[in-house]
Image (cartoon, rainbow, N blue to C red; front, side, top):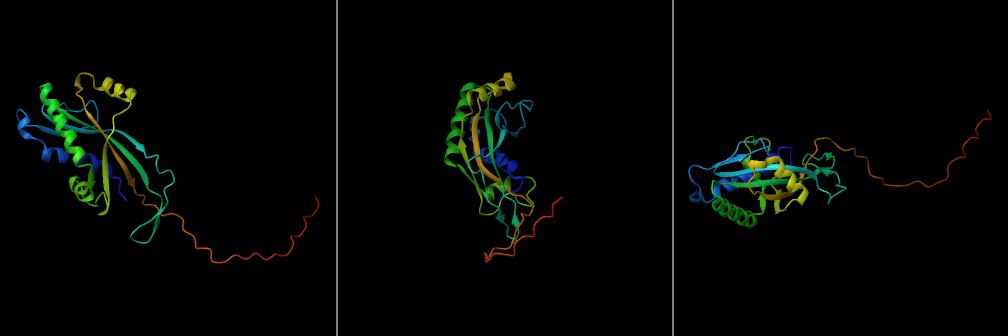
Length: 202
């Protein structure tokens, strides 16, 4: 199960993959690759930006069972989270921006699964690791509803360039709290006991 730093690891990994594999000959000058926090972030003339615009509890798993950790302790149920990312190609020319968008769509669709090794290596603070060695995160292209899209456009206004919207599903944040654990029931005694004493009249 993932640690709280997993949210940052997902966004940083997507940005790092794009930075390492994007076609550099498409850019004019030196491109920038920015992890931004909202519409007031720094504008990028050439490059890519990645930002998390929505966090929500995954509703597919409503009753997640408790989990026993490697130390044998029973932990409280994890919190399954979905992250919605805005991956935005930036360019001073509309045609070049669309070429970069097409490349990013194809690249992320070809590499939808982010393994733990990539996720943990992307963070600037890697100790303790955000994900266990057997974990991974799946990226799915997921366009927002029209109302959400218009809301995003209203906030970005003149800084708006068409983003690619992805959802990182089921990032299960592990709890550090122990769950109450009781002894297993091994036998039941169904014999009738002595009758209860009658209550005294007031």
